[in-house]
Length: 109
Image (cartoon, rainbow, N blue to C red):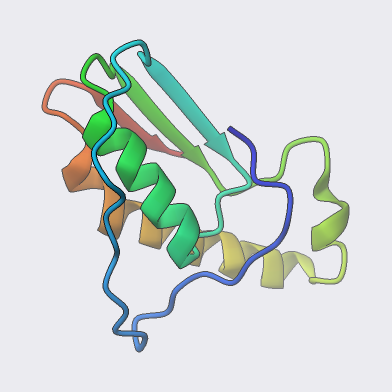
């Protein structure tokens, strides 16, 4: 799964609850790679839904870098990009790590 537009990560001061989508089993998914993940509320909710409902999930990998289409990040300095991606990684770990089934691999690049 690849997110192709820049969105703003949730910050610690935002006290938004993460909504749950209705259950829908995804028994065929074993490995999921999400690129362009910025840690926005909707992205977290979608990734949480996949983690919660993928009964055969072996690995969930989160990558904040928009692979091959990084043109949307050109307006940020390298330091700004690093801070932006660090916040996305922090949000992935905070909101998704506990949702991945025990025994499944969870990596944040």
